[in-house]
Image (cartoon, rainbow, N blue to C red; front, side, top):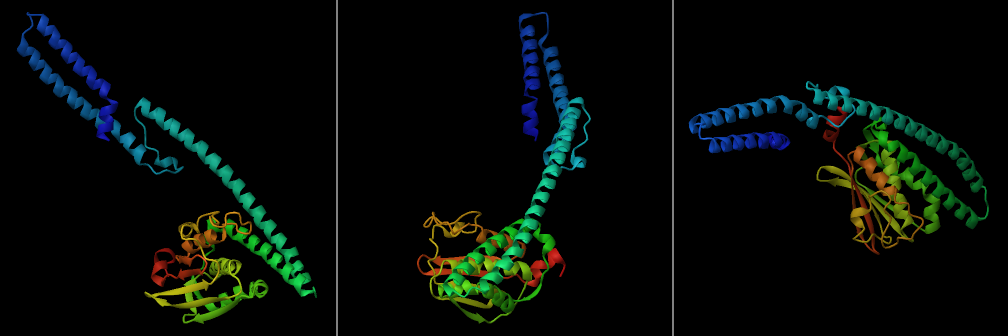
Amino acid sequence: MFRIFIRERLSWILMFGFLQVLAAFVVYIDSAISLWPFLYYTFLSAIIFTGFLFLRYQKEIRFYRETAEREDNLDLSSIPEARSPFEKIIESGLVSQTERFKQEYNRNWTLLEQEKDELLSWIHEVKTPLTAMHLMIDRIEDQNLKSAMTYEWLRIHLLLDQQLHQKRIPSMENDVYIEIVQLEDILFSEIKSLQSWCMQKGIGFDMELEETEALSDGKWLSFIIRQLLTNAVKYSAESDILISSFHQDGRITLKIQDTGRGIDQRDLPRIFEKGFTSTANHHENAATGMGLYLAKKAAEQLKIQILAESVLGKGTIMTLVFPTRNDFVSITGM
């Protein structure tokens, strides 16, 4: 900050130096002026000027340091108090700008909340005819047609579910309840919802659950597992998907392993990015690039680690590493 102040007041320093040189020049051309009084004057003026700079630094830097260190928020109380006329101009500008930003922020926040509420309302309204459609599909006798219709219905249902949770994730911390959840119940429920799709593709499940309980939020954990199972089924041919749970390094671990087409190694670091699908199958229309992104965002709130291993053409292993109770103490006070 001192260097910035010196650069800001460089014109003062140069002006002082110029005046000293001018005085020396006058002494040089005017023999009537004695050299020692001039040197004495130069010494005293240099001390006074240095003291003046120091005092101005102490007085001026307070406002600018507090301005530079203030938090980037819309709190007017964090704006430092101005004393000089120039500082008051800056303070006035900061206050008016902050007020304008607050108004704009509140207006945009209100519009976003309205849009979110309207979309959530629309999704819930669409679920009603979807439920009716599912009941109608169940009455279809042609098994091939029934299987195809069920698959398309399931795709719509999963896309709506993604959209619903995407809108809820930003305020997810208000909708989390950490408790001991039954992994087996959640897994069976999610597998049952994908049953018709799995039967159509000839996919089965092999479960080896050494650990049946974990510390998490049941609703959001179901959503995360739903995204992983959906991907495993989507990108697998006729085969079994292995689901296992066990203790590893003091934490409960859940693995979902398929023998599908796998993920290219160059894509693996990016699979949790928003909208990323694949470089190897870039023109595939079925992928939205949102499932794993939303699963990762939800897992971060639940302090769950999601790890991915894959070999192209041989399958993928998605691993969930659950937190311990101590990981939630600072947040929930459990």
